[in-house]
Length: 283
Length: 274
Image (cartoon, rainbow over all chains, first blue to last red; front, side, top):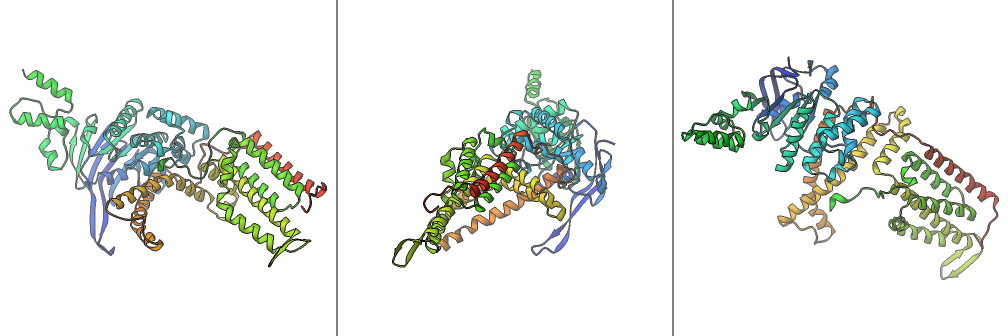
């Protein structure tokens, strides 16, 4: 069993009309089985309303399953005695950079998680320094978060999670509200983190460019996991992805179109360099 | 820029007063205010003036800043002075014209009252000028901690205060954005009488409230995800600890209190009617 393991996970919520009367139930997650090994980088893709964020919130016990079970670090999230252990094991970074920063100074915000865990003061300072350094925000430690850019705020939020020393970090669309520069900043920080500390990274996103370095990719649609494999396998199935309303990276798209026109290119080209190399080899 | 405004009136610089523990500053300011109101003699005011001047000097906050802080109370000040001047009876009559009479004790009370109010505002603005809003919140939390026993949620209130401080600039920026969006669609906030203008604020307030609630919801979730579960079992990154300077500051304040009463009682300094 991996760090996150779900069996037949179901999440239902009531559908309501204008007056708030229940008129039925919606299934945001419908029978999901997933197993994420410790130390891996897993991406979960899906368009809006596919249930990917709902799944992410289950990994932190922010939502509890209506059916089935999810274990995080071997603990059942439904067990009220384990809730704080689950949240400590699986840190979570959210979409909106402004709404997840609690402190009025960068370093105080990073210290918020360890404070809640009851970590001794000296140890908090050490953790704050280390985690700010690992996201490259150490020089901003005394600044007000209001003065930072979106990408910098998200890096502070990531540092805040690292300072809690989780085994796994769940990033719920961390780049959705950022400009392209901020998006790159955040993804680089995540990749660096992955390389330096042996944490499991679960990245939820709808930008496919961000997932080409993942070990495994899950594609969700309508509450189900519809595709699962390495990025190369997934991006080799362009038509299928399009059916799930996903945008394929431009390079992959171009390679696919060229292949359809008769060029003998391999399936699942992810990077520009790969395409260049494949094209050069054609001659 | 809206982003640059500072909440409260913290004047960031390095000084002995800035470095003091926020609790010291809160308690000493209270003691200073009390000392102003329970003595009433010229020598006492001389001591208070010297004390206040010394603290201002040490805080390195420009005097102009502190005087500017008096602006909001000018009307209150005038009102108090006028009321005391004409309505207090006692002692010899100094001036009399038409229905107004100014007596010796009227003049004395009004001058002392004015000095008291001015010193009160100056004293407390020294506190806010030299303590960051977060420092104040932390200090209050620690000072009021004993109230926890009688079920006052001190930690929660302090947490709410510091979150409010963090979100004021964000919400101000948002208000600005919403106003611009409404103006772009032809909303008019500047003309009309006061009622019309108040009415035109509704299209700003409604989206602002909606967004504030959404933010509150997000923030609560983010706090929970980071294991926030109230003040119990929580450690502090920056715990408040009294240092030697803080004890010294307490000692000086106590000495000041003793002095002001001693002087008021035993130094027979009199100037005309005061």
